[in-house]
Image (cartoon, rainbow, N blue to C red; front, side, top):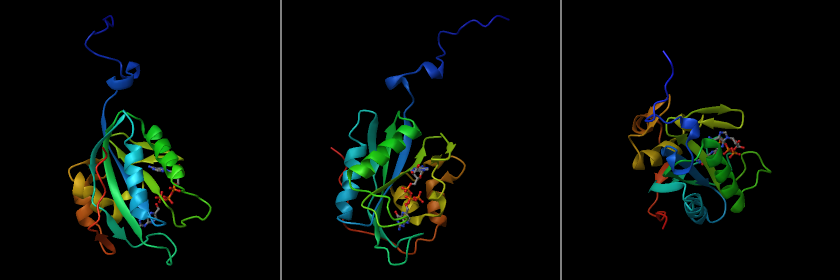
Length: 188
Ligand SMILES: Nc1ncnc2c1ncn2[C@@H]1O[C@H](COP(=O)(O)OP(=O)(O)OP(=O)(O)O)[C@@H](O)[C@H]1O
Ligand SMILES: Nc1nc2c(c(=O)[nH]1)N=C(CO)CN2
């Protein structure tokens, strides 16, 4: 049989701009240096200042004991930003890193205190396993400071290979993670 092109089927590689699929995406935000709440707000505002990234939800803010960091590290503030976006995981990570740099993140001390840390948690059903980019984020399933705020705002999201955010959040040890009264503003 000859291969007759079907005019109703579009080759995904030819899609550009706003024809690319919108994917539900989550970023983990963390800060344990300086005005922590201001840095988290700056991350929300900067990441969503783009026609390709639409804010869906901003989680409550939690204060958390440092995990996998020197025992004298200051406490973190953590939150999760949920967006819909047409961007690839790599573009999202590049935006996360340029936002970290814009707000004074340095990498001189491994696991040292940081003004702003932004991780790409998940990008729809897409996965990446490159040396410098892994999606879903490889350590998210054991991080209460990620799962608890994420479950507040997108509990039904299914993380590829891991399952529902709500189920992971219910299973994680929440010791040392405390919800604050202070909150972040939804971006204008
Ligand atoms: N999903 C991801 N989101 C952000 N960075 C990632 C991701 N996957 C891999 N990386 C890589 O991780 C590297 C280290 O990032 P960073 O210094 O922020 O780590 P960290 O925040 O201290 O630790 P952790 O990755 O455990 O949260 C980055 O340079 C980036 O290339
Ligand atoms: N509580 C808490 N601990 C951490 C955090 C963080 O955001 N919150 N980030 C880390 C590296 O990304 C390592 N440890």
